[in-house]
Image 1 (cartoon, one colour):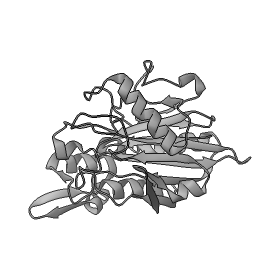
Image 2 (cartoon, rainbow, N blue to C red):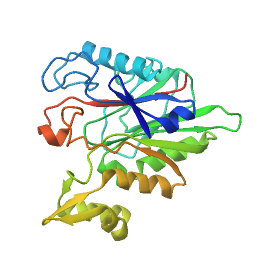
Image 3 (cartoon, one colour):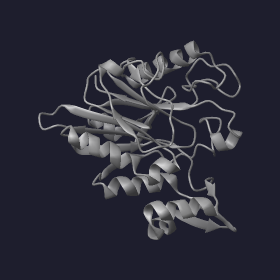
Length: 262
């Protein structure tokens, strides 16, 4: 289950695990442009960088995490980086050494931020043997999804000693709206097999529609993650609440999903 307040969603599962986090909507920020208003966490969308950073700080405060953020230009890959306090500011006020689509940390007061506007945001937490937390944030577009980016994050969490990993999947585009073509189907078959593709891509009224949140949930469960929260909201269905690439033809802001150890 999720709780919605002040423009962000928070997972009851992650909250119960004692991890501060939040999935933003398009509400609660300072952006005033019609396509970015009002919570836009993405650069190069029309807002000044200083305003985007202010929005990110607002999101962090609402989520209860440190404003020491690490983020990145996202490239629809399966690359996940381990980051520490040395990486704070990358992607927002200084350059990143290389782009990626996910982060893992076991350091306090380092907040991990990924951005979405139809793609799937995934936040995860686990604990080491001594009870110390490990957290992850993943941007899973369909390419990253079928490349198992969430599995890459889980592997890094386990390398740090994390077990009992829990996950929360944020709002993204759902099969009601995620129409795909033959090239998409063939790509999914090639990456995950025909059975996976037929399970998560259905034909309706002569067109094909993919279930991105279920794909990610299935992959998480295959990796041994059994405690999973899912926001049952389609971003394209609710452009008044979410930034949606498909609903706007790409003229839009970007939502953020943030997690940190405090």
